[in-house]
Length: 115
Image 1: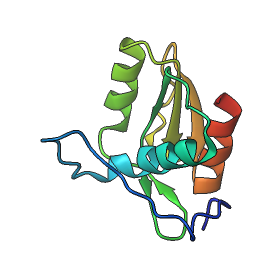
Image 2: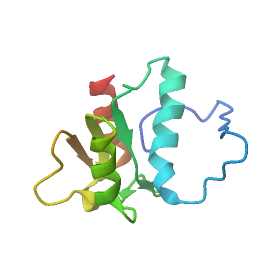
Image 3: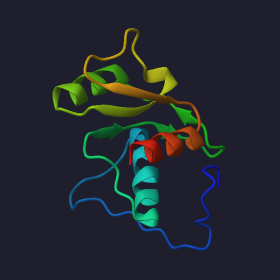
């Protein structure tokens, strides 16, 4: 609804690898972007990392350990990150282009620009 995508008439299923339990809110934004990627038939870039909590009004909230997540993502070879404003470290992260968002619509636009 807040992303401007009409999925109200769609059945959306999210499946996680067997034995894995997703218990933290940092997975909210990646799940939304993955579902929309599937719906649109446009893959997200392999070098993209995404995290953030998504609120019911479409706001994207920071999550614990954001700076550590970004540094590890850069170390693992990721080149782009879509992240909540509250998780952006001062000075950025070397080797990682940060796409800073506060709303779901901004995250969708950033993902579309990278796809």
